[in-house]
Image 1 (cartoon, rainbow, N blue to C red):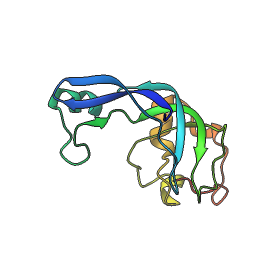
Image 2: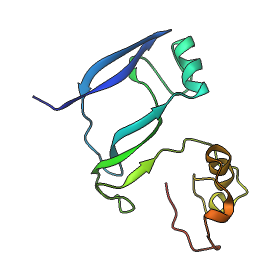
Image 3: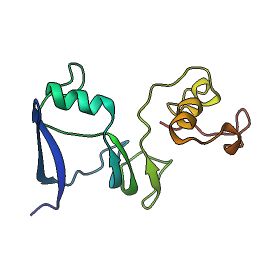
Image 4: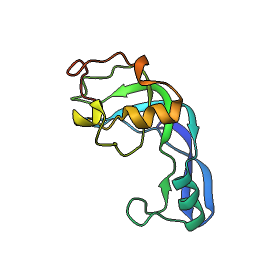
Length: 134
């Protein structure tokens, strides 16, 4: 028997069910994260009310994408993370003007600081001192 977890599964308009599903296995370039905290964003609410997302989701599908947790599995080719690392998914479009956006990263200091209330001075970075994160 495969190990299972409880997940929210979207079936359609205002039809969200908690179900037991198989725990995913990390493929090449992927992580499996044990979720410690999750939240619902405005897009999630719109998708729930509509029952679909025209460009990204086709029900039935596991629902949710904003989370923080601990890495449990690391797929082949992943070098920036290891089992036990605490991680957070920042699902935002880059601003295209900050240091990280200029380096091709999807992590945006401007958006991150606006979400968390932190200030840029806490990052303590210099141009070229950060590794890219995808």
